[in-house]
Image (tube, rainbow, N blue to C red; front, side):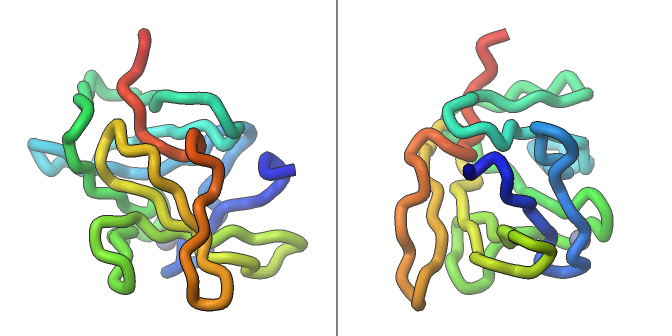
Length: 129
Ligand SMILES: [Zn+2]
């Protein structure tokens, strides 16, 4: 069921997912914005990048919308990335996930409270490739 949600930029409302992947731009170390893909299937770990980016556990990554390039760092929840979950073409929930590689923290906000959202979902994990 989770796999049927769509994920959108909170700034420009562009849909971020294509097929089973969610596309972001990330800035990391050299601060160049580089495309990075996360799976939207729960339980699928790891990121894919077209760049020879090596993200190690504990590294913090800056996320940006791939369309408007606005930063996705949450102002409400510092340290977390904020995007929107849409269902039926309308905003449904705010989704927050950790910008730190290896931290499996994903939340949705419901009635002002953060609820855990699949502990193994949406984390940037070190690639096993
Ligand atoms: Zn955007």
